[in-house]
Image 1: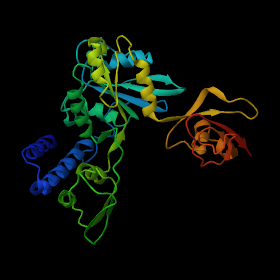
Image 2: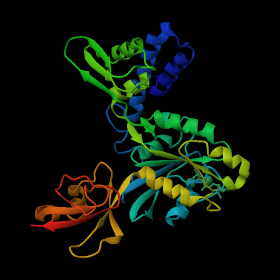
Image 3: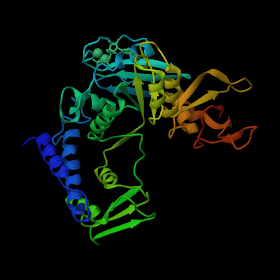
Image 4: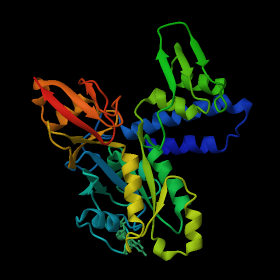
Length: 369
Ligand SMILES: Nc1nc2c(ncn2[C@@H]2O[C@H](COP(=O)(O)OP(=O)(O)OP(=O)(O)O)[C@@H](O)[C@H]2O)c(=O)[nH]1
Ligand SMILES: [K+]
Ligand SMILES: [Mg+2]
């Protein structure tokens, strides 16, 4: 039996098992089995798949961050990408016009952002239908995913696409679960929680641990709504947590009343890529989700240069990161720096060292030895 067939078997078994106190253990086992099978698809034993060479389309990565376009065929991904970046990507009314990754770049708030137009995917993509697995493998490496949807049937399509990406270890708009798992040599299983748990059952936890042959370990849960899926994610460990925007395209085809309803979908932006409607809102939301930090450089005794910020990623935006982003030799000559803006303690500025964490739109002046 192929992995895909075994996955299907487990899924069928899950579908016919009613969820109650008595079946919690069994369902926990099945969920863990499923995760282990899916792992074989993400990174097949013996290599040759997953994030490794061969799977995914090779594109040179440029810019400070990348945005990948995922969606069903003909929802307007290439129309949007071509107009956003000025790079040509074939547009046509037939499905599967785009057959490979088409990269383009976009300048926004002084940052160079790579945009990856991808082939359309269909249900079953993660299990090997069409080029789906290659598309999803590229999406896994992006800093932001645009899920492009046809405004006429957004919710159903969104559910299918989210499920496809989840099957490949991608979690959209989610934080890594606040669960720690410590494996031990002996001592059995210890489960502790710092908050009351509402969605996870001890039987399920034991079933999952047994399925992973983890007979001695300490599980500690710090999140009230933690689920068994969250625990499995932590045990599997190869999940990526990627922000996503649900781009509802082709609003030129619907009425204003219908448009009002769409605004209720979280993380979504309605647009028309063809008539270029509401693209400013999309770009603003993109910027917010990318979580980038702009730093303006101020030469000694001069005004700051607001025209070309150094753009860093949040989480990697210390003064040291800033220096490295300019030139690797700067670190050797670094004495200290003055910083003005949100990260500075005083409005008149603060003298800081390499470990100081910068904030968006801070101004920095570097002093050399
Ligand atoms: N009405 C309307 N049509 C659009 C819009 N954006 C794209 N289209 C049309 O939708 C069709 C598909 O557009 P593409 O940009 O090729 O779609 P795609 O998602 O890249 O398609 P694949 O590469 O085949 O997956 C074309 O006929 C476009 O002209 C829009 O905002 N409104
Ligand atoms: K198309
Ligand atoms: Mg296309």
